[in-house]
Length: 294
Image 1 (cartoon, rainbow, N blue to C red):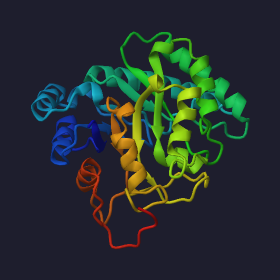
Image 2 (tube, rainbow, N blue to C red):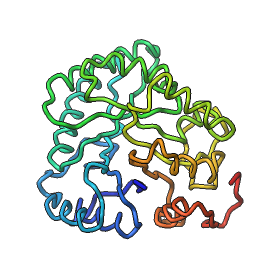
Image 3 (spheres, rainbow, N blue to C red):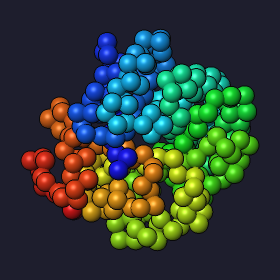
Image 4 (cartoon, rainbow, N blue to C red):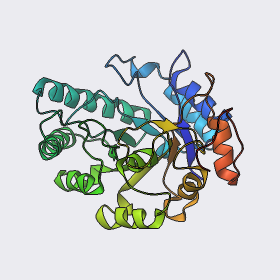
């Protein structure tokens, strides 16, 4: 099973430290930001201990092609209200793709952005225009995975039809795909708890499983259709352990990297415990709080 979690790349060990953490979690992949997601400050990519990290990945059984980079969420290519923000996002994304390529990873997840009051259609057109500007000049083998969103605020990309429209508008179709986030689609109104097969059939019919590059496995603190995007630990939210496990063990997704982005509990990650539970399909209570649904 290609299963792991988000891991911070920080301190002196950088990417090498992230691989060690992933190995400790008994993960077979992981996801990371190349710097803080809320700003554009970046350390020199040559300080990331790339060669040592790649060597350790081989030793612990992590395929670098399954490791995911997440673009910073401050990038907003759907913003037509402030073109300076959009232009800065284009420049920043190009740089993040270059950093991803240098480290040897092949997939970077991108939030589609927010239209900031200008309308969904205009936001989508702005994103498409921006992605074409980024990708038409890119010579790397890095692909952008457009993440499915919850629809909070003025976010775009919270329906399968919107994601399809984005993909259709990108000229370099070989350079884009999708990252499906379980919390996000639940919060957007897709009932994966009671209608798992129906929702996934809809995804396949509109977008296509062949477009799937990554899955974010997250429970949700919110009821169906809340449009809020608040992740919960596996088994403690409105999606529940059984549905998350169903995604993880679905044979159709066996070759897709699956990433946990669940909250810390009492200042520590529960990734190791959650990964083990998902693998063996056996829930163990990890937190001193009531369960919503299992």
